[in-house]
Amino acid sequence: MRATALCGNPMLFWLNAAQLVLYIGLLALLGQGALYVLAGAQRQRNFVYQLFQILNKPWVRAARWIAPRQVADQHVPVVAFCVMAVLYLVVTLAKIEHCIAIGVEACR
Image 1: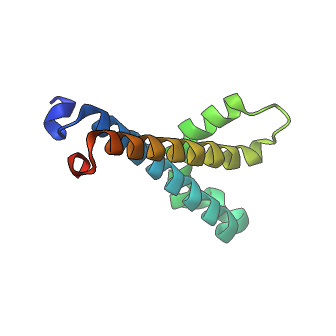
Image 2 (image 1 turned 60 degrees about the horizontal axis):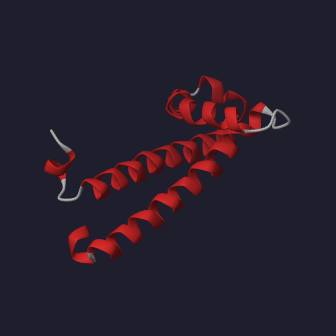
Image 3 (image 1 turned 180 degrees about the horizontal axis):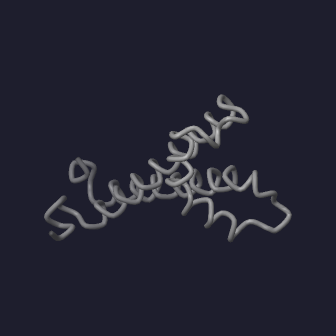
């Protein structure tokens, strides 16, 4: 199935897809952070925390790759969250710009 079959504008489709992937990753990192605080030392045995770790592994690895070595491993998820938040804002601004360029009615 082609991207144009899913929505009228392929650029809008890819911007929406990137925004969705980043949004899911941001929420998973936020959930992992909340469980880090709430579960305390027992978090490694928490099933939901382990699920969040699996979901966030690609983002955390990418953040570890771009972060300097001085950043401690326990802080890398925070770096991943910050990078993803910036990327989410960039994609959102690109989507707004694209919708203004093609007309707001075409983005609905």
